[in-house]
Image 1 (tube, rainbow, N blue to C red):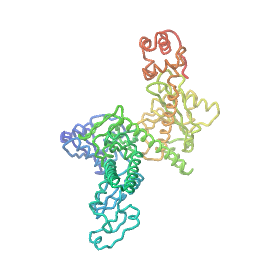
Image 2: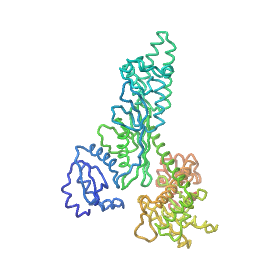
Image 3: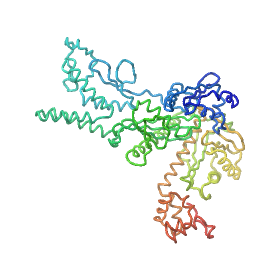
Length: 611
């Protein structure tokens, strides 16, 4: 659908809140969206020039539009989530989560049994959950069976069968794990009271159960029934120990849902911590694939709606790392600055980082587990897709990294035969560039890398990937020309967001087939250079690298460097301070030394070289 075609129907689209559905020429839903004002939101697709290739492609594929008016933004949000889950349109955020979750079922029968299941059947039974972990459910079952006597047999315990004396108690009765309802030794009323305690445990509400046991224990003790009192004491200890094993934050925190997001290219990872009565009862991390130009706020909001619906959360507060527009009016959105909720957020961040690293390790293992023939097949595919003159058996990738605009570093990773060759990885401290200049930094490290290989008569790679697009690619090619290496290897640029590949001098980019093995290899190489570069950068920071430039100034020691960094947070900010600002912070003599280091032209002095 063109802008001109849309202009003919734009006036028919209502201004009310609702959801809109885009269909292609095959009448297939390709995108579902929500809006406070349907006309304004839908019009934005046709009146703007979109930078994103995928958004432009979406608009080109729209054949016709349908919409549904709803009463509120909240209803639009819920309906959008439902339709995305149902139809999984091609251009919507793709949440990769096809797992069937376990439930705890309280069977609809006389003297109901309690057990684990993955199949939810409409048979009148009560299903509690879902839970994120089978291990977690089994642990809960063990806690329940130790503390609350319930039957585990599959006998048909109808009142008529019990009255006729068809059954005899089994070993579980003699072990104290069952009260013998099969022989009428336990009433249904008493059994149902036990079930209510089970529900409390499953919902993370242990206090009523513990308090009941304490009352019963005191009664037994007053009646001199010390053996029964001792049994209850052990059960109380068991429940307290279980609660300690669950991460207890603070009972005053109550019921909250905690979410964090980590984005990397077109992928996003969202962690969910479910907190019941101040105790972390569940945790789940999901992977989402961005299809258009969605920001973290939009992806996180979608994931929150999906996870709260999946796990049937009724919490009235969500804790998140950033301000988001969450349309459920009865839910409070909290961005904590400190306290227990901030600690929960930090714990969620640890979980999402661990998940991403673990996923990466599995990908690497999966690749390394392939046969030589399988790896070669991927390389031949990449050669064909990029029209390379040689099979890319040796690939190198470069990326720059800096922290708050200060102290830049670069990294180079090497893949041989499609597998990471970590012994060949290299990192670089930028030596010749003053300040932050990604282009100049890329030019420097590419020159240093390949002048070294030439001097040592080492083999050159068939493919070099410059992470960062046209600008960095142009800077890298200056060094390639200076070293007279044009034609010796293929050098390409990789746009950070769109996964578009640029060749030197070409106006248009190449996009590899989405989901192809060749694109997956490019992604692995890119992800690895990000990981290696960030890891190196963190190591440098943890060792006090950012102090080194200050401490390298003659007359400036560790205490002064630390004081300046604590106050101004980065070397880059210190570089921009006036002489008066520096003097006010560290005194006349030291302030002048620092100022002259960063402004040599003002006094004629020369700065100390970066290490």
